[in-house]
Image (cartoon, rainbow, N blue to C red; front, side, top):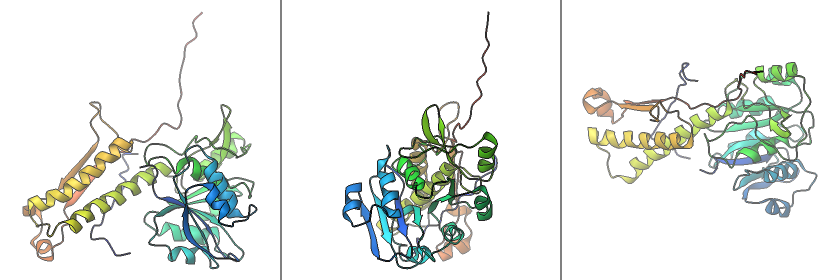
Length: 330
C-alpha cells in the first residue's frame, strides 16, 4: 500500500479525558491447512468453508454471529506460519479487530501484542487466564485483555460480535450484553485488581451477562482509542482524496481552506456519532486552526509541504459509574 501524502497526528491532552469500524479478523497461526484471507457475511458461509466445529476459528465465528450487534462481515485467515508473519502479508486488508487462534509453536501473546502495538489502526482482543498474565504483558495501547477461565469459550468473539457492528464513538465497551457466555464469579477486590491492571472480564449485572469494563492494557478506554483512530483514518482519507481528485491544490489560502474543510467535515461527523462533546449551547467542542500562506515558512512553500494545520476537540466520554443520593421522609 502506497504511503499517503497526508499525515495526521493526535495527542491526547491531559485536561480532556458507519456500521462498524473496520472488519474483525479471526486468524489461525501454525495451521495444518492454509486458508487464504476471505470475508464472510454470515455463519452459514463459515460453516460451509470447511472449518471443523471443534476448531477455534469455528467457535470464535459462532460467537461473533450469535450477538445482537454483529458486524456485517468478518474475515478469516488460516496460515501455516506464525500469526505475525501472516499479518505482514495482509497489510492491504481493511481488518481492525484481531482475534488470534494460536497454533503450536506460534507467537506468544506478548509477541503478537507487540506487533499490533506497532500498527496505526489495529486492535488485539485476547483471552488471558490470570491477573499475573495481564501484568506480564505491560501497558499496551492496542490490546484488550479479557481475564476469563474457559479457554474454549471464544469470549473474544462474543465481545467483538456484540460491538463491531456499532458505529465508532456511539458506545462504550463497558456493560455490553453478551450471548452464549457464562459470567465469572469474582469478588469485588479481584475485579478491582483486574481493572486496575487495564484488563476486563465478564460478569452478571441486573440479570444480564455483560463486560465488566472497557479498557486497553494502558488503562485507556477502548472507545477513546476507537474514536482517535476513526478520526485519524477519515481525515487522512478525505484529505488525500482532495489531492487525488484535483489537478492541483495551490499553496494559497484557497488551497489551504480545502484541506481545512476536509478536517472540519470529519470532525462534524465525529460529533454527530457521539465522539465529540458539546457545550452548554449544544455546539460541538472542536476547533481548527490552519495557518495562512503568509504565516507559513518560505522553505515549506518551496518544498511544497504544508505543515500549518492544527485541530483540537474534546471527547464526549461516557458514564461508567454513578452515585445517586436519595432522602427518605416519614
